[in-house]
Every structure is written in structure tokens, then in C-alpha cells.
Image (cartoon, rainbow, N blue to C red; front, top):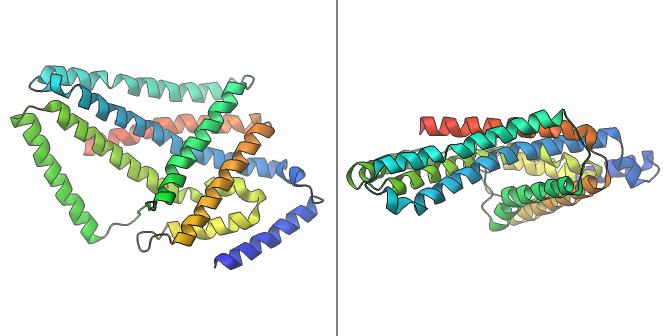
Length: 289
């Protein structure tokens, strides 16, 4: 299957280069190429929005751990700290709204803007794809077995009993709240892992200029939807690393070389809505946990 995909992609690459007089830069500058790159950029921003809330959950976990001693036996102080940690949520929501409004008030792109964009692309791809693949734990699960469901139910029951003991008997509010937000983060991370599998294909559209990699990506994407049955083989992991590095290098080249002002507006709007959506997702997790 992979061999067939590579051959078909190679044929498509030869056809595209022939149509564009064997000029790769001319192929890259085509409007449809920039559109496909914008689709890839939008996909990255969706995953980045959830990443911001993951960072928030981690900060809350650390904060409760730091103030744990002061919270012990002091429910009033614990509630105040918990209330104080809602302030960043307001700031994050404000940032999302700022990105949406700012998209319609375009200004000149500065070197700092370019560097921030590059940092966002690299940090996202490394944390969501590259490191998990290299470690062998990239496995977005879309189906749970009966054993997994039972294990989850037992884990929830165990946590509920432990949390009740910590807050009602031991009065260790900091430890209980730290564990609570750690669990929120784990659920957000699971959602982002599932999205990373679903969105792997649109994310890789930036590689359309290299059809062999895109065709291989399609096969890997189909495989990523069945990882609950069989994990990636060593060959498939290596292939995914090559694809991720290809997206990174090509995205960086396009960001540094081409004028993306026409697509940046769409990317910023989606990023803003992605942040707001991630807040809603976290709120849902909090209220249903």
C-alpha cells in the first residue's frame, strides 16, 4: 500500500512539475498551493487553541501544589485561590477575541510576528506529533474496549473516594484541587490527541507540493484511525516523523518566503475561535467531571 502510494505521488509530482515548466518556485506560488497551506495553518491553530488550555490546566495544578500547605484546613483560602485562578481564563478569552477582531484590522507584519508564527508551528508539531511518535506513544484512541471502560469507571470511583477523603476528612484542599486539574488536563490532552489523528490529513496539505509525501500521508492518516486495533509499526513511525519534518520545513519556508497576508486573516480568526472553543471544552469537562 505504501509503495503504491509513493509511486502514484511521484507520477503526480512529475506531472505538476511538467505543467509548471519544471519550476518548483512557480508551483509553490500558485494560488491553490497557498490556499492548501492556509488549510494546514488553520488546522494547526485549532490544535494550538487546545494547547493553551492544557497549559492553563498545568499551571493550575502547579499553583495548587505550591499553596497546598496554606490551604490545608483552610477552605476559605482554598476557594480564594481557586477563584483567583479563573482570572487567566478571562485573559485567555480576551486574547481569543483580540485575535478575531485584530484579523479584520490588519497591519504590517513584523519580524516578531514571523518569529512567533514559526515558534507556534514548531512547538505544536514537536509536542503533538514528533515527540509522541519518537517515544512510541502516539496513539489517538477513537474507540474504547470494555476493559478500558471498566478501568476508567474504577479510576473515577477511586478518585471520587480519594477526593472526598482529602477535602472532607483530611482537609487537604490543595492536593485535591491539584489532582482535579491534573485530571482535567489529561482529558484535554486525550481530546487533542484524538483531534491530532483526525486532523493529520488537512494538516499535511502543506506538503501538496511534494505529492509522494502527501500520498503516503493519506495512508498513514487512514492507519491513525485504527490505532486502537494495532499501534504504528516502526516503519510507520519513521514515515510519520519524515512527514512531520516535511510539514515543518516546508511551512517554515513558506512563512519566511511568501506574502501570506491574504490567508493570515482566516488563520487568525480560526485561532481566536479555537481558543474560545477550547475554553468551552474545558468548562464542559469541569462541569461533567
